[in-house]
Amino acid sequence: MDYLTRENVLSAVAALILAQVVVFILKLRADRAKFRGRPGPPHSFIWGHLGAMGAIAKSDHHPDEVFQDFANKYGDVYYLNLWPMAYNMMIITDPDVADNLARSMAPKSPTYHESDALIGKHSILTLEGDEWKKLRKIFNPGFSYRNLEPLIPAIMEETQVFVEKLESLAKSGEVFKMNEEVTALTIDVIGRAILSVRLHTQKDRSHPMVHAFQNILHLTESRARFPLFENIRLYRRYQYWKNERTLDNYFREQVREHQVRAAANAKEGATKKDMDIIDLALLDAQRSIDEYAHQAKTFFLAGHDTTSSAVTWAYTELGQHAECLKRLREEHDAVLGPETANDTEALCRKLKANPSLINKLPYTLQVIKEVLRLWPPAATARMMQSSSATLPVNNEHWPADYMILYIPHYILHRDPKTWGPTANAFDPERFAEGREVPKAYQPFAKAPRSCIGQELALIEAKIILAFTARRFEFEPQIKEPYQISQLTAKPVAAMPMKIKIAVKVYGRKLMLSLPYPCQIAPKPLVATANTQYSMHKKSRHPS
Image 1 (cartoon, rainbow, N blue to C red):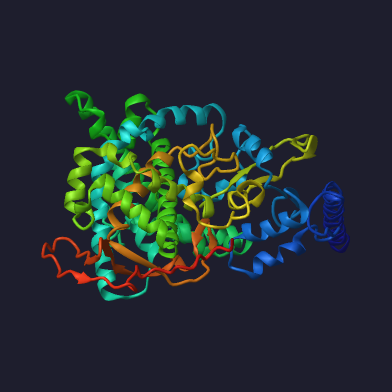
Image 2 (cartoon, rainbow, N blue to C red):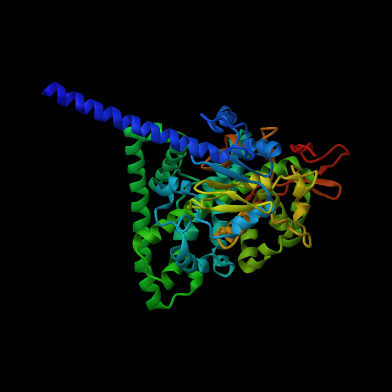
């Protein structure tokens, strides 16, 4: 009897396994059939397009470079059949298709939720529909220029610390990781902007919240690359939970303090210019502590990342394009005054007295926009969760159900069909006043779901360049730098760089730009015909 029972159980288990295998094969067959004959790499019934993805695994370059090679071979819109190892994908590099999708309200890709520990489950980045609209309406005022302008003194204060650090590095002559230094600055700035706290990351990187944030960033990247492996490692899961709790507790406590302050502000009649982004949000609506905390986490992640990448790449490009750096410096002298080149206190006084000067630097803005064109930090990913979903492509309706609709900004921004034969060259004149910006350009995505913090990112980048571009020479140590994927696109190796105190040219004389607070003018040096900026004159980009 026991034997028969055991035999029946084994038979039932075997039948169940067989049924699962049959279901899987039928599902695989249906999935593979959907992509047969569609644009994309060579397709296999067993592997789909997984074989073509080996190029990504073999290189540390950002996957968008491989996707660009595929686009050159298979067209501006093509498929990647990756199930069951990953979501199927439609890669969209056609500017019209990309623009229409980016401007739609198609739901965000579920892959964004891989960052829930960093941004929270109620993040404005991942919410949809009415919930997203309500939060966007609450936080929009805090990111308007009118309400960001009072933050300029705080941004300058943190940038002064950055200048001091760069001066020390210039004197030492050492090679350092520029992106790490700029990231420390932008973390300090976003702390001031959203919470009115000084994190002092530039001087001491042991702040518990910042430490937990960076740990989760690393763990999230590992989980995204190796989800099965990471999820079975119990100690890694414990690390994830511990750091997430530290992060959540910090931001919840900050929101509670802001709620107390909001009540005091209401009694005392405080003005908006004295408020940070969370203060301003608390004026208009009462949401749960977790909802506010999750937005603060989101802004902390997004608010430091875009600017740090943009400034790092600006230094890299300006270090390789002497004429662009010269023109940038001339604009800063003309608008901000030559006396502010080496005196951060004088520059602070001038911008405090007239903060609108930061908006009178058109060439500086052109440089930032061109950097974001060549080196965008992010992409757009959507998913239509309907079995009948299609996407209009070349007057046809292509299947788009339950797959990631991926818009790689890197490829759109470098397409010669849009940007001409010099698409890979650094040329800020593309964004000169009066020139039409192609619809393919979308470093901050497109409305209605464009980046809420883009105004803050541009203000911050302009201020940092105003404080540093005339003061230092930038010498990137990688001849052909590229981006890598670390949740977002980052400069390879954090951009190793050397810097020097700049040599400024006035007429026929050279004058060393001594660092503040030294007020002793150096003895002028007579310029020779061979004297020039110590810059790399050869462009990294092919024309």
